[in-house]
Image (cartoon, rainbow, N blue to C red; front, side, top):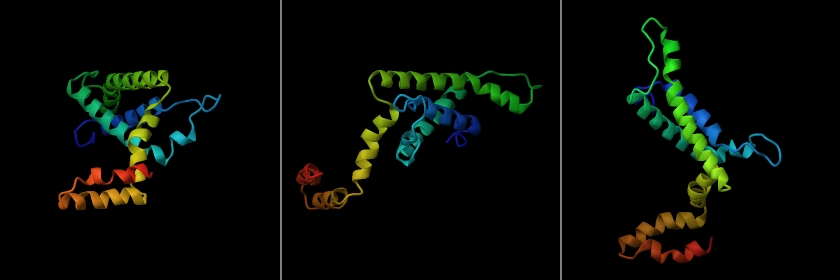
Length: 157
């Protein structure tokens, strides 16, 4: 996404990984470590969301010229590194504040994404989910409010 927006894709990608690690809880029982459950395939949706949000934030900040500008005599790789410092500080600060606020409420970013997006998507893989996908539009075709007619299925989960 950052490459499509014509900004430094490497910096945006590294910031996305850093932002993901920033919102990931660092406590496993009484130990201070990253739990393997937060790095598995179940959290790929939160990783995608963080990657998209960070790329958009990075593009927004760079387009506003909130970057460190170095003279032309400085090599391009060094200049690119310095131009990503301020956007990185802003983005990681915002992600840190989000992680801190959610931890004060006893939750974390990954758990919220799991509860709001992943769990409903996982239920689509069941028979009840496919019944919704197939029968709601079919019932609407016949003039019946499909999701209202299938509320009995929602109670059987």
